[in-house]
Each structure stands twice: as structure tokens, then as C-alpha cells.
Amino acid sequence: MKKLTIKDIANQFSVSISTVSKALNDSYEISVSTKEKIEKYAKEHNYKPNFNALSLKNRKTKTIGIIIPNMLNYFFAQVFKGIEKTANAYGYKLITCISNESFDKEVETMEMLSNGSIDGLLLSIAKETELKKDFKHFEDTIEQGTPIVMFDRIAEEIDCDKVITDDFEGAFNTVKHLSKTGCKNIAFISTISDLNIGKQRYLGYLKGLEHEGIPVNKNLIINIFEKDYKKYEEILKPIFEKNKIDSVLATGESSAVAAMKTAIKTGHKVPLNFSVIAFSNGILARHSSPKMTTVSQHGELMGATATEMLIQQLENKEEKRKFETKIITTDLVERNSTRLSVPNAY
Image (cartoon, rainbow, N blue to C red; front, side, top):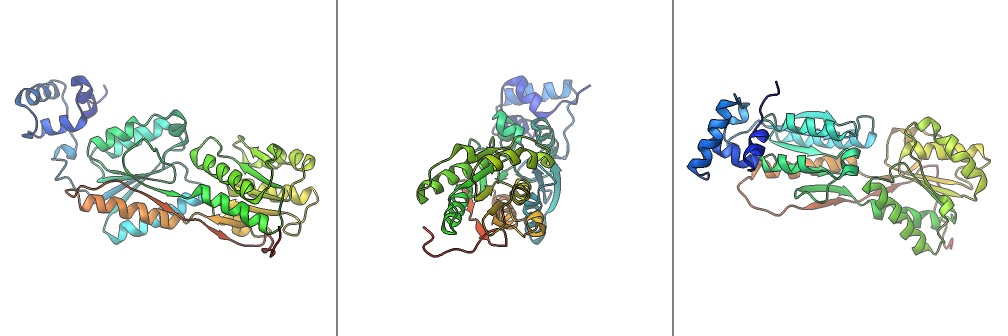
């Protein structure tokens, strides 16, 4: 038999989770009749609260929950590093969970964490959640009294603190850089075209072409939906053979490495007549041959910033404030996959 939750009781009486919590904690804010109905129902259905049966105001675990979409992503590993360092400095413990890009897993994890285990939550939303555009579990968690700070992948519709990368500007500035080194046939390779961060990078790419007076060539806009990165080269090879390409901006390192290998196999010389730049500044980029120029998203700074914002909320709960979105500026880390800037190249 499924255990009755505070959310079930809220649904039964068409009230908020916060109202149920206050009623069960005998709050003066709730009418006597409502309290009696809720208490009676909870008793009849054998409702047993966790240690969060204590007043939400008084509950303090000094623990922060983290939900990330992908454990293999180097960027999220860097974000976690920043979270851990900052949380430790303030004396907070961490519970880390992986959604594996699953909506159901994310919902299940949030219900588990927000049931008294944590004081606040840091999260980057799962791909399925973003595509479904179903954010009710975020609203419920916040209404229940657990604050959320979103990072990197966010839901604009949810009223909470957020930390994002300037994905648009990062792509825009990268195209400008490639143009200044003499590149005119710049391909854009995306493996995340269905996510907002992918869309922002694509729009930045288009704006960069416009700024540099380079016509858009639809053949050079390559969206890869194949999940197996081992097949990337197979997908790119015929495109590289049929089109004139002198450079690539990729949304991730795996596709950028595949592009570089494909370019070399089809007769190009990196970086003499072919340049490659990837978003993220991870291990693949540093160990590729040649070493890859990247758009650094400063994951560690993002994690530290998000954690700082959440802890400020937790430490100053009585202080009313507006939620804000902080933007982390990207930087180009030049290595050996691109030529140095050529003065007056255009």
C-alpha cells in the first residue's frame, strides 16, 4: 500500500501543501474547521510524517540536495566541484542525485529529497522535463517550503534564483573570432538542438555570421540526434566531403573531436586550413590531438555562485527579496585547433 504523503492530503482537500503542513502543525494561520478536517483525514489514513513534521520554519538539516542530469558530463563535474567547495565553507552537507535526463526520475528524486532530508535544492533540469515543459514538481517543492536554485538548464516559468551561461554571446563571439582568423565557411554542429542552451548557441552562431557579413549556408548547420558518439564521424564524413568547410563550432567536445578527426581524414590540416572550437573546457579538449580551443563555461564558478545564492536564502529566510538570474560570462581558451588571429583578415 502506497504511503500517504502531505501532497496526497493537499490534493484531497484542494489546498496547498503549505496549508496542510501548517494545519498539521496547529498553525494559527489556518482556520479551526480546516485544521480539524485535515487532522482527521491524516489520522484515519495513518499519515506518518518524517522529521519534517516539525514546523518548516524550524527545520534545519544543514544539508543541500543536488540533482544533475548526467554524471558523465565534465561540465557538471566542474559545477559540482564549485558546489562542494562552497557548501563545505558554510558547513553544509550534500546529497547528490542523478536524473539521467528522465522526467520521472527527477520527480521521484525531488519528492524523496524534499520530504525533510534537505534545507534547499540545487538542480539542472532533465532533458525530458524541458521537452515536456511540465514543471509542477518544482512549484510543489517550493510551495512546500524547500527553496530551489536552478543552474545551466533552467525553467524560465519557475520563480526562483537561477545561474546561467551567456550561451548566445559565447557562440556570437566565437564566430567573430573564427572570422578574424580568416574562416569564412563556418559549420555549426549541435547535439543539443532541442534544449534551450543549444538554441541559444545556434542563435548566437547566426548573429555572429550576420555581424561578419557571412551568408548562412544551411548545409553547414548540422544537428546530430544520434546518442552514440562513436557514430558521429560516420554522420559527418559525407557532409564534409560534399561541402566547403574551413571551421567548426560545436556545442560539445565529443562532436568537436569527431569533427576534427573527420576533417583530418578528408584531407584538411588542423589548424593550418581548418579550425575547431567546442563549448566546454574538459578533459577531451585537453587531450585531443591537436589540443582543442574551447569556449569555457566556468562550471566551478557556476556551482559556487548557485550554492552561495541558495545558502543566502537559507540563512536569511525572514528577509524578503526578489529572485534573480546571474549570468556567467564565457571565455575563449585558445589551444592548437585554431589559428592565431590575423590582423585585418577581413
